[in-house]
Image (cartoon, rainbow, N blue to C red):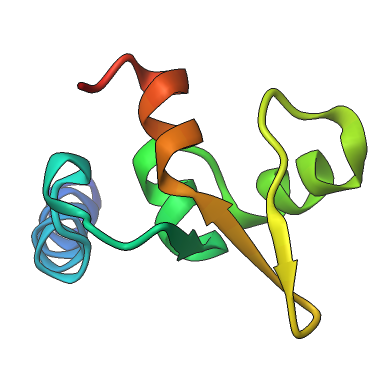
Length: 81
């Protein structure tokens, strides 16, 4: 019974996230915040924060102390046209 409850909670979260984050092909901004980039890359935001220290396949811009991930780099990394 517990597994069914967890599964439905995961399904609701996935549906909610899909409404929160538009498809990467539809993003027309030059950068996205860490949470969005993590969603598109299927990673946790903390992983991207580690990448920002120089160990990742892409590097973010820093705008007023915040990380901004270039959409063009995300698309290139994911192979999205």
